[in-house]
Image 1 (cartoon, one colour):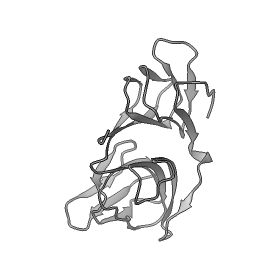
Image 2 (spheres, one colour):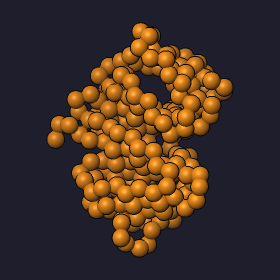
Image 3 (spheres, helix red, strand yellow):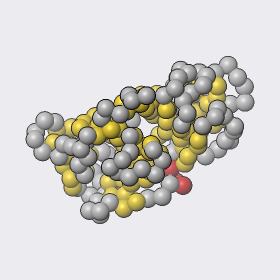
Length: 207
């Protein structure tokens, strides 16, 4: 991560390379957790969880009852996702394009051409909702109480409170978490092309 600066209260920076990798039980890949709420919550207690997974082999996805999932390709040729009940047969092969499905649904993952890296958002149904927007040029995050997480897939992005100077830069595999909401409109702008940044908004439903 480059040119970090002081920002709004609750703003946290992260870099994918600094996150610990946790091997899957079936040996088919590893996961790096970016953030979860409550912090440190286990898989049966979180309200939301954002992570990056490296899929190295074909196999089933773990089932998570009561969880809504969204997945987006970060790197690699992609993966075919086939629901056990036949409700979908999806090729996840476009970088940054999210695909949503219910976590309790049985899903078989088949690599299209070698290992892939994927971005994952999981939210507990009835407690939290997530939306993912893929930006390629510039965008402004509106002020609000919702948690917002940014992850840069490609390029370098200037960022800072809209209308203020002293902007910093996020590079590929860097990100930011507005853990306490966004107090004022926040602007991001790609410094060159190609560029791609994911913006995840996490809206708690039980507040």
